[in-house]
Image 1: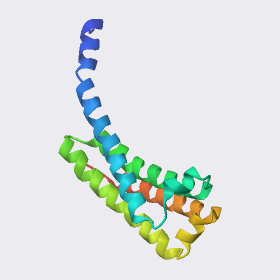
Image 2: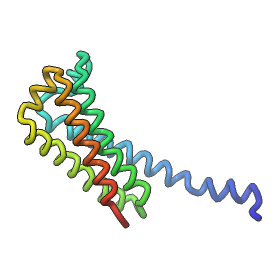
Image 3: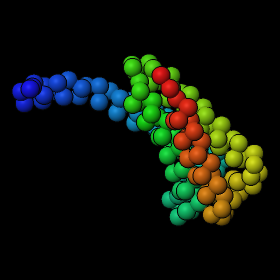
Length: 140
């Protein structure tokens, strides 16, 4: 049986890795949000600040859709470089999800700007569904 001290020490060994992966994850999420809001033709943050629920729902869905495979990448990463490679793949797939949703709904930017909820629901659903598939497809 292990002593309590050795159990605590073995747990503490992982703290630097926790900090590294958490900081990388937060930075990658920030990069994703910046890129995502730059490729869309509308100002998500301006719309959200003015009370546009549709813009908030669309951006939230995109963030969740990216966070799902990012979390999987963090959980299975064997190094920081490995994490960055899988996170980049997740980022590209999520940006493609936006492009596909926009191609299917040509009026999507207008729907979001006009706070028409069906556009935000479709954007969020497409992003989250794509994120789930993306995370499931990642393997070691």
